[in-house]
Length: 398
Image: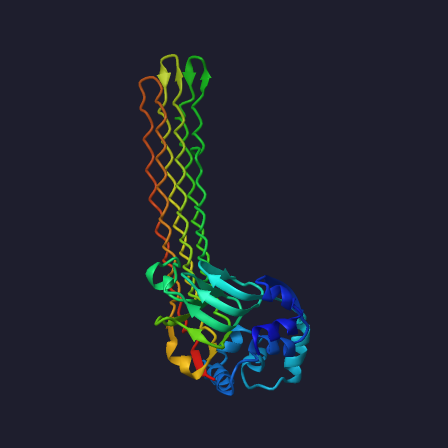
């Protein structure tokens, strides 16, 4: 089907396209069968067999635990006949909106990115020329079809793109966990000891100044949150009627989503300063000792780092080109890793000692309290446990 045939099926203005216009339509797709027709009609029998085989070769339950829609995906891209359960699920999802862009000719001079998490995208071109740029679908379903593809030598000599590919089908990395907030610190000292009071202006009670209250412990640092799991690259279908490369390969790359790093643990709060001792009595010729200062509070323990997120396996990419153009396609992919655990939070500082109270006439000052001890460092977060394999790129000659 030529790009004009597809545009006509969608209901776009053919005269405007022939005149060089670019038409972008947000279309409503009312059924899974219509979606399959638009986004996967070009898949070969080998493509569909590969999809179903790869889906069920995944570790038991993993693919299905990642997505409740794996069965629907297997019906769209694989060999699965729709079941009553699948049909009921599809009817709860559809209609959905998709973005469809058509053009007689388009030149890609910059990095064009769809997503993350955009509407499914159908790009329908007469001729697409890669002249220093790239097309990337990030966490987004893509169908890219063109009657003819050209690779401009400009792409070799002047790298306008920051990407080492022409077409990238990528997942989304999990978000890094948030850092834990610091534990609570009390900035005012603990309560001061009671001053010794005279019985009358000339006589002390004989009771020394009161001891300062001990400082409270600093609050425990809050833990970092868990890093997010990666999100997979979604399936893509690429169909070209002709490829003219001027000796340059057409590069297609896929990469799934890595796990996010766990958040760092929060620092423990500083221990409270001990209260100062109360002053001794001073009356006439008499006096009493000053009260002892309170001990400083212990620093709060640091918070634990958050655990790292897991990576996730990617979905397949299906490429259909003329048989004589298969050798012009270069495919690359990389495995992505799990997230590191967050760093432990540092223990809080020790609280300062309270000062001894002043002694009354001819009597001793109170003793200074003892400083608190610093809090312990928290535990580091655990790393994620699973890397993410890239989806396969299947190139088939027609």
